[in-house]
Length: 84
Image (cartoon, rainbow, N blue to C red):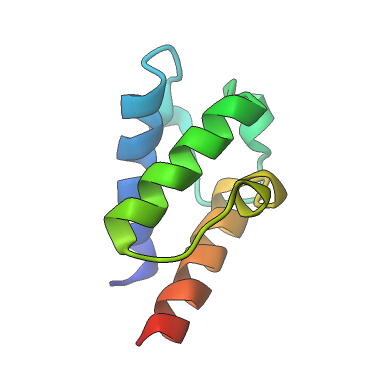
């Protein structure tokens, strides 16, 4: 799965977790999730869903340390590469 596909899945997941977030504004960059309106709880929920969807190990601390779309996508890429 390439970076664009991972990001698209991330955007869909954010929208599904919290319908108040305008996920269409999200960009694959270092803009903090907080700037998009995500709370720490929302980040953990997104992380849990992403982990389940991709079949990777992902803890709450991972969700909180990945503070931007780019950092989360990069982390997912690394986990997927390690799982292969």
